[in-house]
Amino acid sequence: MIGGALAGCTPSIGDKCTLSTDCSSNGDRLCDTSQPGGYCTEFDCVGNACPDKAACILYNASISGCGFNDRNGATGARTSRSSCSARCGSNSDCRNGYICADARNPPWNALILDDDQVQMTCLVIPADVVDAGTEGSSAVCSTLGPDVPAIDAGAAQVNDAGVPPLFPDAGDASDDDAGDGGDASDTENGG
Image (cartoon, rainbow, N blue to C red; front, side, top):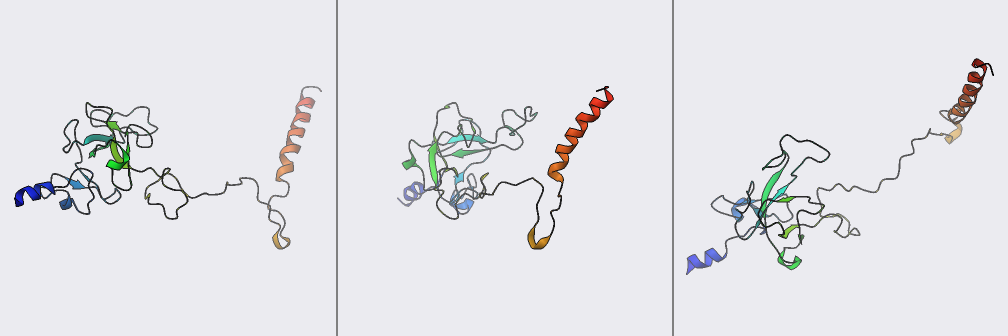
């Protein structure tokens, strides 16, 4: 009876974890601590081989911006990583901080390595879905940054405390040069 109770407590792919031993005492599953609350998974999975009705997902399958990548193939680019992700039917099947989604869609842009190409899996909620009104977003890695005012690349005009502008004639020089250049060419051409 105790053996049956222990088997029922075996962590599944997608379960919360802190250490890899939280996922498996055999060392066949690891705790991905880069995921919110940890995520029990198997890294370097191959298609149709994930346990617990999980899907094998290949992230970063190609290098963004590279038209040709000699390392693309069955295992993806040198930056790619495959791992098992918990399958789901709706958001209620996923833990807090995760969403039931198709990993092939943005922002994940992953590949499903299994034969079943319409699987939904529990994935980290994207930063753009997280409530923008909360301070200290839980998204650690994000391409989004703080709002920064646009940079004015024009010549700086410093007039504080009677200091003259750094480039007083910068705006006029291009206008005068353009006019002079026209006159010089007319003169050279006999005009």
